[in-house]
Length: 284
Image (cartoon, rainbow, N blue to C red; front, side):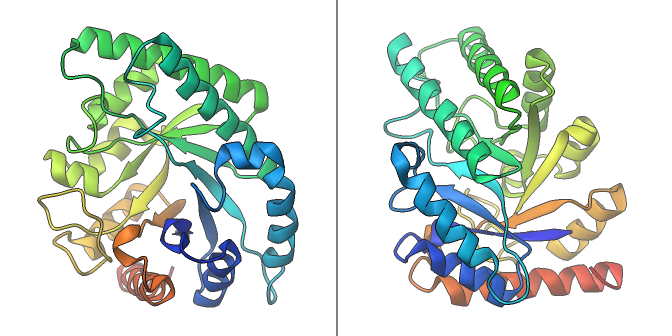
Protein backbone atom coordinates (compact mmCIF):
# COMPACT_ATOMS: atom_id res chain seq x y z
CA UNK A 1 0.00 0.00 0.00
CA UNK A 2 1.39 3.40 -1.00
CA UNK A 3 1.25 6.13 1.65
CA UNK A 4 0.71 9.80 0.83
CA UNK A 5 1.21 13.07 2.69
CA UNK A 6 -1.62 15.62 2.67
CA UNK A 7 -0.14 19.12 2.39
CA UNK A 8 -2.87 21.03 4.23
CA UNK A 9 -0.80 20.93 7.38
CA UNK A 10 1.96 22.91 5.64
CA UNK A 11 -0.12 26.00 4.82
CA UNK A 12 2.01 28.14 7.17
CA UNK A 13 5.17 27.07 5.33
CA UNK A 14 6.43 27.21 1.73
CA UNK A 15 5.03 24.38 -0.36
CA UNK A 16 8.49 23.03 -1.10
CA UNK A 17 8.83 22.16 2.60
CA UNK A 18 6.04 19.61 2.20
CA UNK A 19 7.75 17.98 -0.78
CA UNK A 20 11.12 17.89 0.95
CA UNK A 21 9.69 16.51 4.19
CA UNK A 22 7.60 13.89 2.38
CA UNK A 23 10.71 12.62 0.64
CA UNK A 24 12.83 12.73 3.79
CA UNK A 25 10.22 10.86 5.84
CA UNK A 26 9.58 8.19 3.22
CA UNK A 27 6.13 8.94 1.82
CA UNK A 28 5.36 7.57 -1.63
CA UNK A 29 3.41 10.54 -2.99
CA UNK A 30 1.78 13.89 -2.25
CA UNK A 31 -1.93 14.63 -1.99
CA UNK A 32 -1.84 18.31 -2.81
CA UNK A 33 -4.24 20.55 -0.91
CA UNK A 34 -5.66 23.24 -3.21
CA UNK A 35 -5.98 26.20 -0.88
CA UNK A 36 -4.20 29.48 -0.44
CA UNK A 37 -1.36 30.23 -0.18
CA UNK A 38 -0.30 27.15 -2.13
CA UNK A 39 -2.20 25.45 -4.96
CA UNK A 40 -5.56 27.26 -5.03
CA UNK A 41 -7.15 26.42 -8.42
CA UNK A 42 -7.85 29.99 -9.50
CA UNK A 43 -4.31 31.09 -8.64
CA UNK A 44 -2.91 28.19 -10.67
CA UNK A 45 -5.16 29.08 -13.58
CA UNK A 46 -3.87 32.67 -13.55
CA UNK A 47 -0.34 31.46 -14.11
CA UNK A 48 0.71 29.92 -10.84
CA UNK A 49 0.69 26.47 -12.40
CA UNK A 50 3.83 27.38 -14.31
CA UNK A 51 5.65 28.33 -11.13
CA UNK A 52 4.31 25.22 -9.44
CA UNK A 53 5.54 22.98 -12.24
CA UNK A 54 9.01 24.50 -12.15
CA UNK A 55 9.12 24.13 -8.39
CA UNK A 56 7.85 20.56 -8.52
CA UNK A 57 10.37 19.53 -11.17
CA UNK A 58 13.16 20.63 -8.88
CA UNK A 59 11.62 18.99 -5.83
CA UNK A 60 10.59 15.65 -7.31
CA UNK A 61 14.21 15.00 -8.20
CA UNK A 62 15.19 15.62 -4.58
CA UNK A 63 17.68 12.96 -3.49
CA UNK A 64 17.50 9.77 -5.59
CA UNK A 65 13.76 9.44 -6.16
CA UNK A 66 10.58 11.26 -7.02
CA UNK A 67 7.70 12.68 -5.01
CA UNK A 68 4.71 12.74 -7.38
CA UNK A 69 1.41 14.53 -6.85
CA UNK A 70 -1.02 11.60 -7.04
CA UNK A 71 -4.19 13.41 -5.92
CA UNK A 72 -5.18 17.07 -6.16
CA UNK A 73 -7.75 18.09 -3.52
CA UNK A 74 -9.10 21.61 -4.00
CA UNK A 75 -10.57 23.42 -1.02
CA UNK A 76 -14.36 23.69 -1.33
CA UNK A 77 -17.78 22.94 0.25
CA UNK A 78 -17.67 25.85 2.65
CA UNK A 79 -17.54 29.56 1.92
CA UNK A 80 -17.68 30.53 -0.92
CA UNK A 81 -17.85 27.39 -3.11
CA UNK A 82 -20.60 24.88 -2.29
CA UNK A 83 -22.56 23.50 -5.25
CA UNK A 84 -25.27 22.09 -2.95
CA UNK A 85 -26.57 25.42 -1.66
CA UNK A 86 -27.90 28.70 -3.02
CA UNK A 87 -29.46 29.67 -6.33
CA UNK A 88 -28.54 28.49 -9.82
CA UNK A 89 -25.89 31.18 -10.31
CA UNK A 90 -24.18 30.17 -7.08
CA UNK A 91 -24.24 26.51 -8.14
CA UNK A 92 -22.77 27.44 -11.52
CA UNK A 93 -19.98 29.42 -9.89
CA UNK A 94 -19.08 26.45 -7.68
CA UNK A 95 -19.18 24.09 -10.66
CA UNK A 96 -16.97 26.40 -12.72
CA UNK A 97 -14.52 26.53 -9.82
CA UNK A 98 -14.34 22.72 -9.66
CA UNK A 99 -13.94 22.49 -13.43
CA UNK A 100 -10.92 24.74 -13.06
CA UNK A 101 -9.64 22.44 -10.32
CA UNK A 102 -10.04 19.40 -12.58
CA UNK A 103 -8.20 21.24 -15.34
CA UNK A 104 -5.34 22.14 -13.00
CA UNK A 105 -5.20 18.59 -11.65
CA UNK A 106 -4.76 17.39 -15.21
CA UNK A 107 -2.07 19.98 -15.97
CA UNK A 108 -0.01 19.10 -12.92
CA UNK A 109 -0.16 15.39 -13.73
CA UNK A 110 -2.27 14.26 -10.77
CA UNK A 111 -3.95 10.92 -11.37
CA UNK A 112 -7.14 12.09 -9.65
CA UNK A 113 -8.87 15.30 -8.58
CA UNK A 114 -10.82 14.80 -5.34
CA UNK A 115 -14.15 16.44 -4.46
CA UNK A 116 -16.90 15.95 -1.87
CA UNK A 117 -20.35 17.37 -1.10
CA UNK A 118 -21.15 20.45 0.92
CA UNK A 119 -24.14 20.80 3.21
CA UNK A 120 -27.44 21.43 1.43
CA UNK A 121 -30.11 23.66 2.90
CA UNK A 122 -32.07 22.14 5.77
CA UNK A 123 -35.33 23.28 4.22
CA UNK A 124 -35.14 21.35 0.93
CA UNK A 125 -36.30 17.79 0.38
CA UNK A 126 -34.23 14.65 -0.14
CA UNK A 127 -35.48 14.50 -3.73
CA UNK A 128 -34.29 18.05 -4.40
CA UNK A 129 -30.92 17.27 -2.85
CA UNK A 130 -30.53 14.18 -5.03
CA UNK A 131 -31.54 16.01 -8.22
CA UNK A 132 -29.05 18.81 -7.61
CA UNK A 133 -26.27 16.38 -6.68
CA UNK A 134 -26.73 14.17 -9.74
CA UNK A 135 -27.03 17.16 -12.09
CA UNK A 136 -23.80 18.62 -10.74
CA UNK A 137 -21.80 15.40 -10.72
CA UNK A 138 -22.88 14.54 -14.28
CA UNK A 139 -21.66 17.95 -15.44
CA UNK A 140 -18.35 17.55 -13.62
CA UNK A 141 -17.90 13.96 -14.81
CA UNK A 142 -18.51 14.97 -18.42
CA UNK A 143 -15.87 17.68 -18.11
CA UNK A 144 -13.49 15.21 -16.44
CA UNK A 145 -13.99 12.82 -19.33
CA UNK A 146 -13.21 15.56 -21.85
CA UNK A 147 -9.93 16.21 -20.05
CA UNK A 148 -9.34 12.54 -19.16
CA UNK A 149 -8.80 13.48 -15.52
CA UNK A 150 -10.75 11.09 -13.24
CA UNK A 151 -12.58 12.51 -10.22
CA UNK A 152 -12.84 10.94 -6.77
CA UNK A 153 -15.97 11.57 -4.69
CA UNK A 154 -15.49 11.45 -0.93
CA UNK A 155 -18.22 10.97 1.66
CA UNK A 156 -18.22 13.20 4.75
CA UNK A 157 -19.79 12.84 8.18
CA UNK A 158 -23.20 14.23 9.12
CA UNK A 159 -21.37 16.99 10.99
CA UNK A 160 -20.18 18.28 7.60
CA UNK A 161 -22.91 17.40 5.08
CA UNK A 162 -26.46 16.10 4.76
CA UNK A 163 -25.90 14.93 1.19
CA UNK A 164 -23.51 11.97 0.89
CA UNK A 165 -22.44 10.36 4.17
CA UNK A 166 -22.56 6.57 3.74
CA UNK A 167 -21.35 3.80 1.46
CA UNK A 168 -24.94 3.36 0.25
CA UNK A 169 -25.16 7.06 -0.62
CA UNK A 170 -21.92 6.84 -2.56
CA UNK A 171 -22.87 3.63 -4.35
CA UNK A 172 -26.24 5.10 -5.34
CA UNK A 173 -24.88 8.34 -6.78
CA UNK A 174 -22.10 6.56 -8.69
CA UNK A 175 -24.74 4.31 -10.27
CA UNK A 176 -26.99 7.27 -11.13
CA UNK A 177 -24.22 9.34 -12.71
CA UNK A 178 -22.74 6.24 -14.37
CA UNK A 179 -19.49 7.76 -15.59
CA UNK A 180 -16.15 5.99 -16.14
CA UNK A 181 -14.50 9.18 -14.86
CA UNK A 182 -16.20 9.32 -11.45
CA UNK A 183 -15.00 7.03 -8.67
CA UNK A 184 -15.51 6.66 -4.93
CA UNK A 185 -13.14 6.59 -1.99
CA UNK A 186 -13.24 6.12 1.76
CA UNK A 187 -12.06 8.25 4.65
CA UNK A 188 -12.02 5.72 7.50
CA UNK A 189 -13.33 8.29 9.99
CA UNK A 190 -16.62 8.67 8.12
CA UNK A 191 -18.01 5.13 8.46
CA UNK A 192 -16.80 5.06 12.05
CA UNK A 193 -18.94 8.11 12.87
CA UNK A 194 -21.86 7.09 10.66
CA UNK A 195 -22.21 3.67 12.31
CA UNK A 196 -21.08 1.40 9.49
CA UNK A 197 -18.10 -0.70 8.55
CA UNK A 198 -15.16 0.62 6.57
CA UNK A 199 -15.32 -2.62 4.60
CA UNK A 200 -18.81 -1.69 3.34
CA UNK A 201 -17.09 0.72 0.95
CA UNK A 202 -14.93 -1.99 -0.56
CA UNK A 203 -17.72 -4.54 -0.76
CA UNK A 204 -20.29 -2.16 -2.27
CA UNK A 205 -18.02 -0.16 -4.58
CA UNK A 206 -15.64 -2.92 -5.64
CA UNK A 207 -13.04 -1.63 -8.07
CA UNK A 208 -14.73 1.79 -8.07
CA UNK A 209 -13.18 2.44 -4.64
CA UNK A 210 -9.90 3.97 -5.77
CA UNK A 211 -8.45 5.83 -2.80
CA UNK A 212 -8.28 5.90 1.00
CA UNK A 213 -7.87 8.57 3.65
CA UNK A 214 -6.20 6.93 6.62
CA UNK A 215 -6.34 8.60 10.02
CA UNK A 216 -7.70 8.02 13.52
CA UNK A 217 -10.56 9.61 15.48
CA UNK A 218 -12.17 9.79 18.92
CA UNK A 219 -15.26 7.89 17.77
CA UNK A 220 -17.54 10.85 18.44
CA UNK A 221 -16.55 13.58 15.97
CA UNK A 222 -14.98 14.08 12.57
CA UNK A 223 -11.76 15.38 14.17
CA UNK A 224 -8.77 13.67 12.54
CA UNK A 225 -5.97 12.53 14.85
CA UNK A 226 -2.69 10.73 14.28
CA UNK A 227 -3.04 6.98 13.67
CA UNK A 228 -2.70 5.26 17.02
CA UNK A 229 -3.92 8.23 19.08
CA UNK A 230 -7.63 7.52 18.65
CA UNK A 231 -10.16 4.73 19.02
CA UNK A 232 -9.98 2.97 15.64
CA UNK A 233 -8.49 -0.56 15.44
CA UNK A 234 -6.19 0.51 12.60
CA UNK A 235 -3.70 -2.42 12.57
CA UNK A 236 -6.48 -4.97 12.17
CA UNK A 237 -8.40 -2.72 9.80
CA UNK A 238 -5.40 -2.32 7.50
CA UNK A 239 -4.90 -6.08 7.50
CA UNK A 240 -8.55 -6.59 6.54
CA UNK A 241 -8.41 -3.98 3.77
CA UNK A 242 -5.37 -5.62 2.22
CA UNK A 243 -6.87 -9.09 2.65
CA UNK A 244 -9.85 -7.85 0.65
CA UNK A 245 -7.45 -7.03 -2.17
CA UNK A 246 -6.97 -3.28 -1.85
CA UNK A 247 -3.29 -2.38 -2.24
CA UNK A 248 -3.53 1.09 -3.77
CA UNK A 249 -3.07 4.52 -2.19
CA UNK A 250 -3.76 5.74 1.34
CA UNK A 251 -3.22 9.37 2.25
CA UNK A 252 -2.54 10.03 5.92
CA UNK A 253 -4.86 13.01 6.20
CA UNK A 254 -3.49 15.21 8.96
CA UNK A 255 -5.01 18.67 8.84
CA UNK A 256 -5.01 21.79 10.99
CA UNK A 257 -4.69 20.11 14.40
CA UNK A 258 -1.01 19.54 13.64
CA UNK A 259 -0.25 22.72 11.75
CA UNK A 260 2.38 24.09 14.16
CA UNK A 261 4.77 21.15 13.78
CA UNK A 262 3.83 19.48 10.48
CA UNK A 263 7.08 17.56 9.98
CA UNK A 264 7.06 16.07 13.48
CA UNK A 265 3.53 14.74 13.23
CA UNK A 266 3.77 13.73 9.58
CA UNK A 267 6.76 11.58 10.49
CA UNK A 268 5.12 10.08 13.56
CA UNK A 269 1.98 9.21 11.57
CA UNK A 270 3.98 7.74 8.67
CA UNK A 271 6.19 5.60 10.90
CA UNK A 272 3.24 4.25 12.86
CA UNK A 273 1.32 3.25 9.74
CA UNK A 274 4.39 1.64 8.16
CA UNK A 275 4.81 -0.41 11.32
CA UNK A 276 1.15 -1.45 11.26
CA UNK A 277 1.55 -2.60 7.67
CA UNK A 278 4.70 -4.53 8.52
CA UNK A 279 3.09 -6.29 11.45
CA UNK A 280 -0.04 -7.10 9.47
CA UNK A 281 1.56 -8.43 6.31
CA UNK A 282 5.13 -9.29 7.24
CA UNK A 283 6.18 -6.47 4.93
CA UNK A 284 4.62 -3.54 3.09
